[in-house]
Length: 266
Image (cartoon, rainbow, N blue to C red):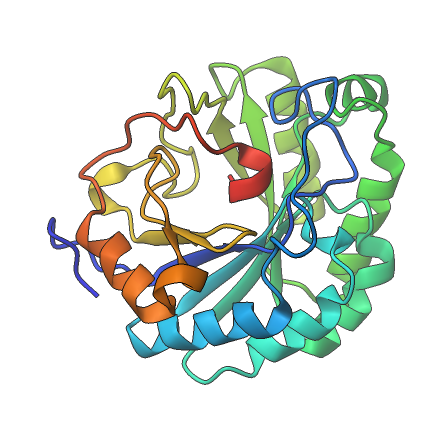
């Protein structure tokens, strides 16, 4: 699928929940958030039907996101259902890995082969501060289990303030290299102010080559993370929502005053 700027849109990011088991300072306010009701969140059947339609239109790459996708009840079965869709050439998941120790093996059996893990510091105390209470031991154990099971590549997503030579970023890089993981540095973003930058070690943030569509947990197809535009799959149907989103996909991101990282998928 080509948009108006001749970009081939073949990548779909699917948020399956707005819930998370961490409260990272740059993602969620300290007082918590108003969560979607269960009937607002797309069912597994709705998600799978949407992805099938997207694949029929040219999507070949699918990433499962959240919130934290592993807190969604039945996530392994959903992964299995998605992995069985003909035409998907690349299926991955972004996770904080807090629960990966118990999920690595069943996710592998379901058909998932690679993961991106959010990790901004390897200092236990700083990790607890940034995540408002998270235990980095769970992440380290989860990464170890994923590596043991055979996930490859395992990519570390490290959010930086400004530069990838910041002390925490350098420590994360050393940890990643020593364990055979890839590392990507993501500039801290602000949806409402339209602040974003290109990911170091990845393609994110490069508007000229953006090939993504996003499906939010409550069924909005978004052409861009930094945009208020979204088309409801429940109101329009999957195909029409996809076509409309691609038809209005902007040349570059602007601002997003309606969505948040925790319910769009970052």
